[in-house]
Length: 346
Image (cartoon, rainbow, N blue to C red; front, side):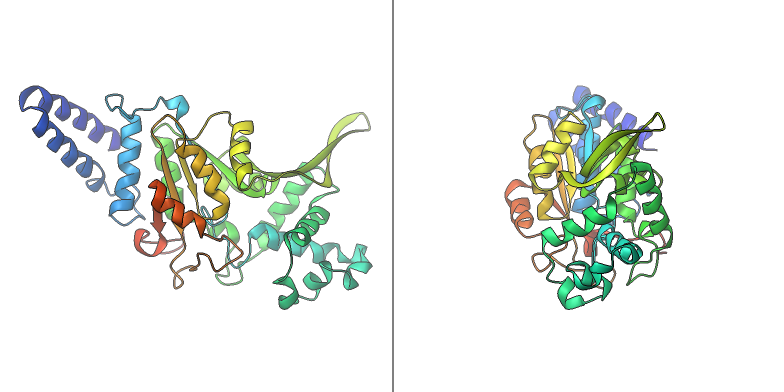
């Protein structure tokens, strides 16, 4: 349907330019742009009609239309998405942090000193007051200890086992069921129009690779994320990698632009985030020569999901809201722009 409408649009544009003049041509083009998305209920069906949905579709149509001055060749149509809070739920804690804490409990019998050593004691005792005060260093220590000492394949298997069983504390479903249906539709819509979609996450690259293909339709080689160091070794003459408890790369803040350059090698023309940690990724897209499009997901629906901006340590969006106004980034209101949030909702 989309391709048919695009063809009709191009034909009428040409007819209008040659017969009725430039002013009427512009009017027809504007009317057809609106018609092309409003007439097809299959285009982003979980999005409410309005300025946000219109902005997405007009951008995609423009960069896909060879007759448009904003046209971008298919090989340069790169779209990057943050994961936590952009593609799936990140509250009350990041899923990978919940996984790491579960691993602390699992590994505790092998480390008796953890019972009296912070930050592990707080995790084992489920001390909410102490947990709320954990620093980034504390969290990094938990992740390093629980994610190392095994091959990448072994780690991925453990992560998948946890994802199969672990339930979100509020919604009581698996984390992979808490993906945002409107964003899944957006990923599919972009790919249908010649975009390559990438995840660029502050989370662990191996953790997200474990479920990205099945959950988002994004292959593992199109995941950019934080990583720990690996060591090469030979075991019985066979080459293996072992994960070490040392940070290799943090794909957050400025690291997102660096990670995009290192892993993708092209500047995105569309970037989607939800927190101040995504600012540099959006700025990187915003600074390109091609037509570009940036969006921030604003969590403002406490009834159906969560509501937060500056008042959180998880997915804080403060400076990003200010920059969105200054630089013309589109802010997605979950409350106003999304008809439904999760795939399991009717």
